[in-house]
Length: 340
Ligand code: ASP
Image 1: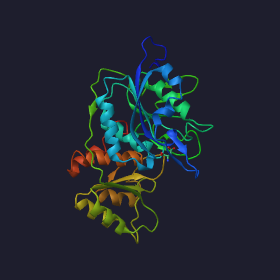
Image 2: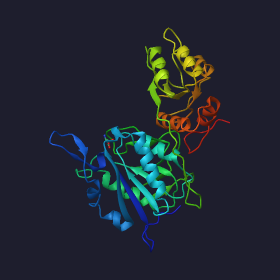
Image 3: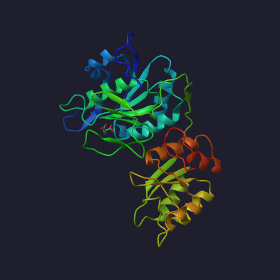
Image 4: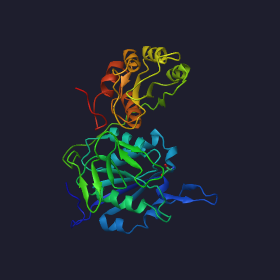
């Protein structure tokens, strides 16, 4: 795979701004808030223009705590509508929900024939020690490479959109690739893994049907089963972060009757692990098997973020419980390793 930094015709890149620390300013009270003219801040990085002809499109201007599924749809549509006009896309985003957006765009923009990069920063571009400048430059370098997937570029890693996880509020390497090798590393040069998809004549697909009425929550000692009843009554699906291999309390405060009742009312219950690394293995312990026997769907090695977004995406397409089960356990965009 090539990094195309020295070509005759400058590649064209669309830089989408959505807010986030990278373009934030510090207010008089010391808190960071989204800068109104994010595009103007980005103008301060002249290297970007050496790499590519860059257009800037502002689609939101929020702390990413305020990102909603509606904004995911706006970004996906904007990229898809302009897919022929640019060689690559860079989305500047807050780090807090960057993984959710990366997963959402991965499911919504399939069969990509060019790269869609999501990046951000731990320290605002305007402040000393910012990682924003390097992250943006590296994002544009990857956006003009031969890669053709939705990826997160942050620090020294290139991570598949469905595998990214924010693991640090302190380190400049804020994201890791969970349960899969990174798609590339950035050092003196950019090295891509052989698993990364490359540019081709594929015809991109926009698959934006989404049912956002899905909940995600962890189990914890003493959790009341009524919480699951409440969620089943108010949502169309839920992802439960079980313990370890996908274990669910079955004792005095058993959650199993509430899970069975939700499933009997056609509210799918997906179980992932609250551990960062590893896969659900729900037959391993009786406490996991009980949930499986009640009809819970194992998320296997999907991150909670990917499982949540995927369930929204699957429920946007079907409400048939059998299809939901099989789609959740099928790999669409590298989000899980299928069990054969
Ligand atoms: N709260 C910020 C955001 O997600 C954090 C960041 O961007 O690093 O927008």
